[in-house]
Length: 411
Image (cartoon, rainbow, N blue to C red; front, side, top):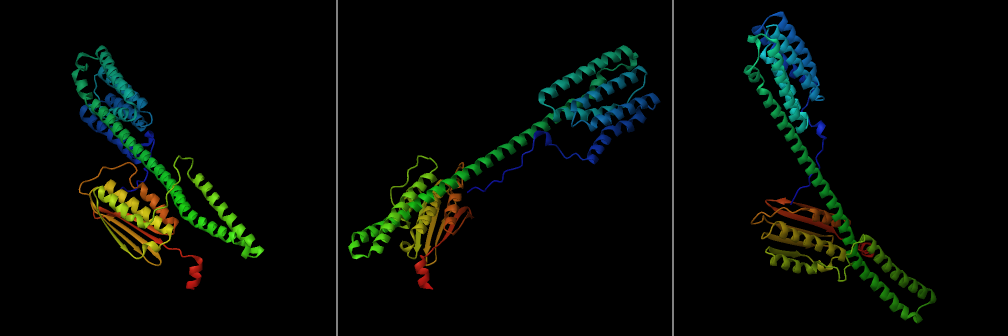
C-alpha cells in the first residue's frame, strides 16, 4: 500500500540557484582575477602591461558581480574590454597574462546557465565574431611579431567548455523543476481524489444508514397503524397520540429519502433496493476472494448476529474493502480474517501475506482506506492500516452503543 506523499515546495526558475552570499561572490571574483595578477609579474612587468591588466581586472570584477542578474551585459563588457586591452598592449609591444581569460570563462558559464539556449548560442557565436574582428584589428595595428593567430584560439579554447557546462547546469535545473512540478501535480491530484472518495463514502454511509433506520421507522409506523385500528379500545387522548406518532414516522421516512437524494450530489447512482449487508454475508465475500485466487481463512468469535445493524454494516464494509485490496495488490496471497464480538465492541482484523509476485502500482492506491477510516470514525471507532513483514494488516475496532433503556437498566 502506498504512503501519503507530501507535496513538495515549487520554486520559480529564477530562484533555482546555488547559494550566493556576499562572501561566496567575493571568493569567486578573487579566484577569477587574482591568478592573472600573480602571473603578470613573470609575463611582462612593464608599467603599460600592468596598467592594462589592472584596468581590465577592475572592469571584470564589477561585471562578474552582475553575471547572475545581467549575464549578457557582464559577458559583453568583459569581452570588449579584454579585446581592447590586448590590442592596445600588442600595438605597444607589451603582453598581458594569458590567465586574464580565466575571468571571462566565468562570464561565459553564466551565459549558458542563466540564458535561454537560443540566446546562449547566439551570444557564443557573437563572441567568436568579436574575437575574429579583434584579430583583424590586431593585424592592422601591431608589429609583425605581435600579431595573434593560432595562439589566440588556443588560449580561448576552454571558453566553449565553460559555456557547455553552463548549459548542462541549466538543463539539470529545469529537469529538477519539472520533476518537482510533476510530483506536486500528482500530490494535488491524489488529495483531490481522496476528498472525492471521502465525500462518496459519506454518501454511501448515509444510504446504508437509511436502509437500516428506514426498517425501524417502518416497523414503528406499522405498529402505530395496528394500534390505531383498535382505537375503539383507547381513550381519545391516546388515539390522538397514536395518530401523531404514525404521521411523524411517515414524515421522518420521507425526509430521510429527500436527504439521501441531496447526499447523492446529483449523481446517477441509485439508492440500494436490497437490504443492507451484515456480517452474515461475510462468507460470500470470502468465497469471492477465494475464486479470485486468494487463500482466505475466516475465524469468528462471539455472537455476531446480536450486534447492532450499523456496527455489522461497518464491519462488513471494512472486510469488503480489505479483501478487494488483497485481490488488487496481493493476488494469490494468503489472507486471515478475525471477527471478534463482545458486549462492548466489534474487532475486525484482516492480515494479508506478501504477494507471490509484485503487483503493479495503480493510480489512487490506498484511497479506499480513507473512506474506511471515515466510516469507522463515524461510529466512534478506531482504524489502522499498515505494512507488516511484506504483507498488510487492517484493524478496526467499532464500539457498540446500547439503547438508552438498556443502559438505564444496567445502572
